[in-house]
Image (tube, rainbow, N blue to C red; front, side):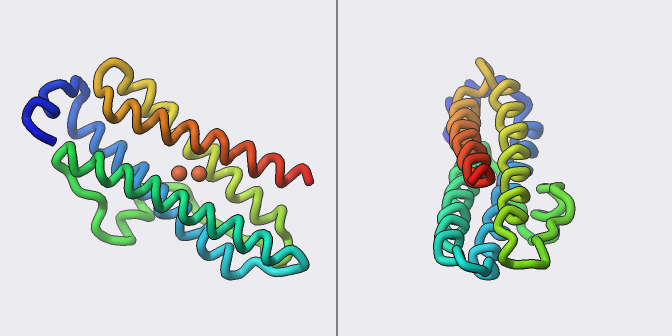
Amino acid sequence: MGQKGREISKVDKKWVLNELRKAYAFEWVVHYYAALASQIVAGLRTPVYEEIFEEAAKGEFEHANKIAKRIAELGGEPPETMAEIEKLASFGKVNFPNDRSDIKGFLKIFLKMEQHAIELYDDLAQKTHGKDLVTHELAEDLLADEVAEEEEYENMLRE
Ligand SMILES: [Fe+2]
Ligand SMILES: [Fe+2]
């Protein structure tokens, strides 16, 4: 981001960079688990869920990249190591169902992740409102995506 671009941001730059790094890390964690789920899911409906989880993995990867772009504009860098990513994401342990055909078991984990993301972006959108409009808009866009994804998982769980 250029000089003027930096001047117009009225939030603490260190704070906002840290929030964005946390969000980036969390998106990577969700990306990883969705990709893994698409590889290990089993049972009668495997092809359907393979694709659903693969698409989810792609979507969260795109989110991570959008966040990385904003981090760069603010003069920062995403976390460098996977250990940092896990720490910053601070989502805790993920236990996929031992029964790999337990689709609902998988879906419940991803629903929780969407809800975690919703809290994250709602908070970021609130705190940057009227202060850092570019980050605010990014947070709103991501929030809208995560809200839609939460609903999709809820609907799949109802099937
Ligand atoms: Fe996301
Ligand atoms: Fe999501």
